[in-house]
Length: 380
Image (tube, rainbow, N blue to C red):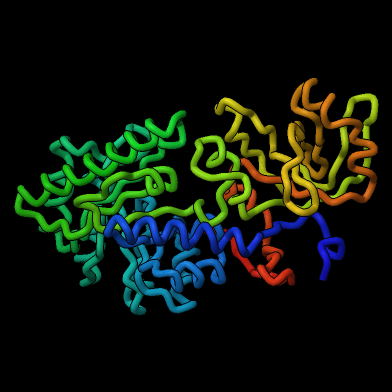
């Protein structure tokens, strides 16, 4: 089936790029002596996870119980639910664990630790738990030097849960603006999480696992001494935010949205496509980077970026393609002739996770040139 036969908008995955990204991350972390536990929230697709596992990944990370359920039904047993556990979800977690799923939950407060332990005692069940460590002030977690860390560890260990270790996510890496800053953030993530583990062990508490992870820090860490595993997710597809950070090249972005030109506003210099924010999402992650890509960078039908052309605006089902600036417009020419009615374009997303979530399946351009359809799922 040629691309012209696909209904648009469509989530298009380039398998060759996908496999390059999977092997690149796997080989890098193997060279640093740690396991890769991929985060499946980006693709939410069994076919992608199967390829990660075949490349050497061990276990998965999930952000929803729906992900845990789907992947468990598909045969995955080693699952880390890496979002702070709400007490109301412990019943569903326990049900999965009692069916044979080694589902690890996450806490970062004394109240959460006590809730997990109490639920376990009430139902004669020992939950597996990790403590989230805040290594960058970005989001959740306990600072490594905070006395709360040991108190939470004790509440879990003495309360009947199994303390598996500590984990962190260097979300602040997305705010880095140089390769040196990324390397420094990776070392900060590593050293502070390792320090948290050392404090738990010094207090006589078990801490077998030290889990760190974000795509930028995973790809720029110089050392992972003391770390046992890395979690990363968006690397399978990459996106414009990763490109803006210097984490990937444009020809490594494996996900794009295939759209069709449906009209023009010649006096405004616009081409209109049938992919609006319902296809691209409203994520504007590049607007805080040195180069704002609007709602996405526009490529031709082959996936080659058209210099200076972006999706500058988006309505629900309409995307506006325009030149970034006057210089690009002068070099690029008239879009009425450059992209005539019916022309196909591929639009690279700002945030692959958000864009992928707009679709129920991927159209996959296989390395052999054929097309396959891979299901994905949404929901919580």
